[in-house]
View (cartoon, rainbow, N blue to C red):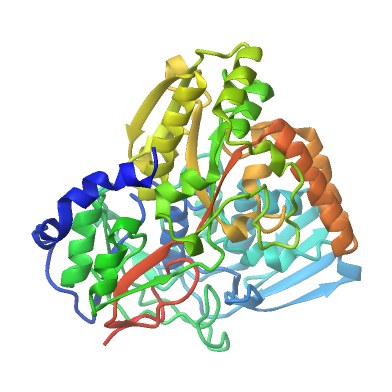
Amino acid sequence: MLRRDLMLGAAMLGAPAILSAPALGQAANARVIKFVPQANLSTIDPFWTTAYIARNHAYMVYEQLYGVDDDYNVHPQAVAGHVVENDGLRWVFTLRSGMKFTDGEPVRAADAVASIARWAKRDAFGQRLESQTESMSALDDLRFEIRLKKPFPMMLDAFAKVTTPCLFIMPERVARTDPFTQITDATGSGPYRFVREEWVPGVKAIWVRNPNYTPNPNAGPARNTAGIKVAHFERVEWHIIPDAATAAAAIQSGEMDWWEQPTADLFPALARNRNVMVEVADPMGLIGTFRPNHTTAPFNNPAVRRAVLTAVNQADMMTAVIGTDPALIREGVGFFAPRSPLASDIGLDRLQKNIAAARTELQAAGAMGSKLTLLAATDLASINACSLVGGDLFRRMGFDVEYVATDWGTVVQRRASREPIDRGGWSGFFTFWSGIDHWTPAGHNAIRGNGNQAWFGWPDIPAIETARDAWFDAPNLATQQAATREMQRVAFDQVPYVPTGQYFQPTAYRRSMTGVLKGPPVFWNIRQV
């Protein structure tokens, strides 16, 4: 099931269908920005989930201690500065004075401490920091310290990272929520305030400019998530439009200002519109994964997981997502981003594109005909495409596929279930990560093998954790590369997930918008002209 099959319905619509799409509201103005996000915002907790949609919401609502520029260099945001003492065993951070939450309360060191503690329970990088932390406490309203058992030189990288879950500063009262329970209070100190009473999941989400926000005057120009954050809009509106033709019509007519992830079949029509800019937003690309549930049959058997590796065709997957343009797809992708110095070709020969061999492996594993419950998000085009191709692949392998077509928000909620399949559980789902997520082991949640503390799917693979520890302790790049080669060797044997390739996603926005930054979609620095 290749891209030509998936595009057939869209191709039959043609230009008239796009032009006749229903109106969605008033034309954009300089005080309001209307955005079509990649998916529905189903949770407002950026620690509870790794979904980018929650992170993108959080960038508006919260401030970070540090941000990164286009080259991923770290810059202060909520902090005025820090000092490192005692041979790297004591870090003291000082917050900027004058910061306030949307409820008028000052941002205090105690808020930062509680936020770090909650985030560290859910994030791979944070878990490593937590394991090396002796104590963490507020010294006064603006200063807090972290005392370590052993030096942790990557501290600032952990605090500034854009890989999910990212660290955001919440009020202490909110940050004390159990990290495995979703928060319901979006009080923050970022450039915008979330308007919960106007939030209609599956339809729209609204933010308004935060009058209490104070940008860091010394942060420098806005780049990626770093620099001065100036909110030029009074109101940000996210409109959930699952139908691509309708979204395309809205961006071309000016009823919408920005479409985060247009589909490949509509690129030509968008590019022909002189009022629309189409460009790749994230030069790191997006890496596809199939995540199996390691806690229940059939994927609690590593031989069954290896059979999927034998069968998967990364080129078919990425062609279904983005088309045949070779500049936008990449196959031969392992467990680290291809451009990372930590990537290697260890184990890539396991990707055989061989259905017959995979059926033989499945038969030998005693899993031929096993039920497979596939969670398939239909409202996110890239995941929908992979799910369709993947569902067909699984059937040809010999699985009895229960194809659960639903929205991404429901997938995000259901994948947290550890129940058996017959009680609402699941077998697997497709998703994507930014290339920077898979750059190093530090923030690479999908490769973790730490059992019940791992990302959804909960693989228990101690050998991966041992090699990951070796990477953190490595004194130089060569030793780091040896550790990640071992991680990849084990991963191709035990299969925490199946890599499905890489693609580069263009975004589309009206040329009347200036100041759109590279990286995740953020809503500061942008103006309507």
